[in-house]
Image (tube, rainbow, N blue to C red):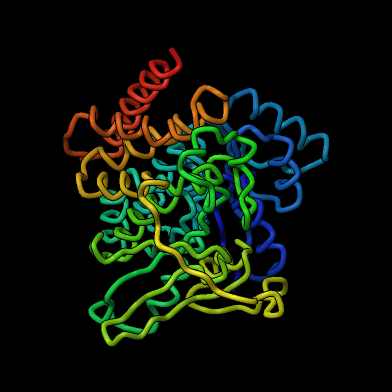
Amino acid sequence: MTRKLAILGSTGSIGRQTFSVVESLPNDFEVVSMSAGTNVELAATQAAKHRPKLISVATPEGAKELTDRLRAKKFSPLPEILHGPEGIEQVATHPEAEIVVSAAVGVVGLPATYKAAQAGKTLALANKEVLVAAGELVMAAAKKHNVAVLPVDSEHNAIHQCLRAGESREVKRLILTASGGPFRKTPVAQLKKMTPKQALKHPNWKMGQRITIDSATMMNKGFEVIEARWLFGIGLEQIQVIIHPQSTIHSMVEYIDGSILAQLGPTDMRMPIQYALTYPLRVASKECTLDWSKLKKLEFEPVSEQKFPCVRLAKEAAKSGGPAPCALNAADEEAVAAFLAGKLKFTGIAAVIEVVLEKMPSRALNSIADVLDADCEARRLARQEIARRKN
């Protein structure tokens, strides 16, 4: 039986690898709708190959360019081509789509993913912002509409697999593994001198720029703690982060009897993507295998909060609740962009986030509109602090 997919963020890293999985299992999946940002050229190539019925891009100009490119490729009949927030929401709620791969970068994918949950679509979740900024709202909608939320992130995907071995009441703690990024061995005193070029040299994974910088600061692990809380309904005190440089064990679950189950695999995102798309079945992979001959050792180290303060900031934001996790994400995105642009030191990323969390007004978030308002306010505060530091 062919499963019909909507892909949010088709031209990003996860989107491209989702298409790779679809192509490796051509009889199992059909892409009926997709959204892309500004990479219209790649979107046109993907559309010509997979022939979705609906495509959305970021801007009206992009929509026109996409139309022209598809006509040049003699694509007939043309799919429906939309743009902007309304377009991505229509992609996510396409009546034929059964599974929505939420991989759009940033909060742009949040309203669409929420609408997909309300429409009863299964969510294959790769967008961290969805649960970090609006975990309570999204998971409430998923529960109300009986929607499965299947994590695509390798760490949460690993935990999802390990949890199939026991009951929730038998779980003692979840253990998220982290590579430690490019600065695992860098002395704390030298971190302020690190450049974007150095920070983008991840030792194990090939990812987009923001997630690679988040790995260097370990904010990605802070986000994952918040996500794990919502995905698995477990207390923050039961979630631990440890450094595992080889990135072979993607995460672990410790049970109350002392047993620890770990999920191992190659550093290849196609494996967790395929797991999420084929769940509850396991389908043979044609390309993802672990090379045991290269597995010489498995190392584990504690996380230094002095070196990686972003993990602490994320936990504090999660405990505060309300707009704090949303502010955490927004401030991080602004600070990372400033660092990449040479406007902020590497250590300034955590410093900006801390200031934003201190200044962020506390209030309840009762709707996605409230979340987006909090996101805007946190970005304003972050830009203000970045400008102050520059001056």
